[in-house]
Structures are given as structure tokens and as C-alpha cells.
Image (cartoon, rainbow, N blue to C red; front, side):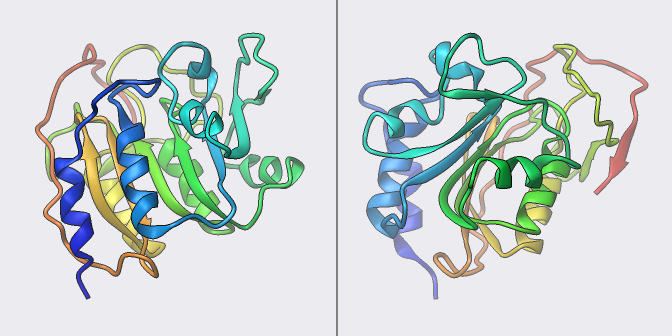
Length: 221
């Protein structure tokens, strides 16, 4: 059955921008007011932006949440575990830091192997809500991701991550409903036992917001 409250997400407005890049805190408030919380546990990586005013987790942490924050560089913040994340080690890292099998929010933004890492996570863990960065430079309808490279480092160009369509396929594969996208940058999914599978018509407008890097290794997803 269609969850009518989801239609309201597009009307959520940010009165005061706190820490997230596009004011996503207002959307988090709206979602969790409607679906409730379980353990108020979050996982956020890369999380160095906790220090830069671009954090998806800082607002929640200030409001009673706990969780695991990881990044390749902690920038001296003791809350951030300094870890280089790969598809091979991500589940071991979750176990190392005692991440519960079910938790309320996963935020992933590593400018590289995001789709491959998320695929590994969803094979073993069950976050209720996911926010992930997608590559909005890729045209609408194209389903591709960077070729997996565990040593990938973002070159500040458009060779990173995966397309909107690829992430939407991944979400559906593991039982998640796409409910929103923000600024041609972030997609938000909710687990289908909470929001049943339904096409809410979420789309985006391609935006070449990074320099083009030609002749790179992409794979169909």
C-alpha cells in the first residue's frame, strides 16, 4: 500500500541550514517523525566533513543519536575512526566497531567505490534508511559505476561513484524503496518493510558539476 506521507518529502523546506550540505536534517526529521526510530544508531562514512559543515550526522549526534563515523582522515576529530574503506573490509569494520545488524541510518559518501561498498553492506546489515551520494554528472537512464578499484582516490573530477539508475537498481535488489533525491547529489531510500515497493517518480536533472575525466573504466550495473 502506498505510504502517503512519502509524497510530503518533496515539500519539506529547510528553515535553518545546520550542518548537512543541502539541509538534509529537515528531511531526516520528517522521515523519522513518520517511521519512528529503533536504536537511534547511525553509520556515516566518509565522515571527515563533520568538521567542515557538510555533515549528515552531526545534527543527529547532537540530538541523542550515537553511531559509527569513519573516514580515511579523521582531521583530528576523536569521534571519527580513521579507516580506509574497501568492499573487502567494510563488514569487518562494522564488526570491529560493534555495529548492530539493524540500525536507523546509513550515510555513505566516499567519492569512489560507493556502490560496491554499499552492496557488501546490504548483504550483511539492514539499515532502515540510507542516504548515498550518486554521480549526477551521468545522464538520466544510464546504469553504470566505476570499475572497482580498492585503492581508488577521488581526483576531483566526474570519475567516481555510480549513476542514479545503478543505485536505484541496487536498492531494489536489497529491498529498499527510493523516496527522494536531493540537489542531484543524494538519494534517500527506506527499507521496504517500512515503505513498500512503489515508484514515486523520483528523478533528477543531469548536472556537470565536476570536470569531465575522459577514457576511464566504467562498468554497466
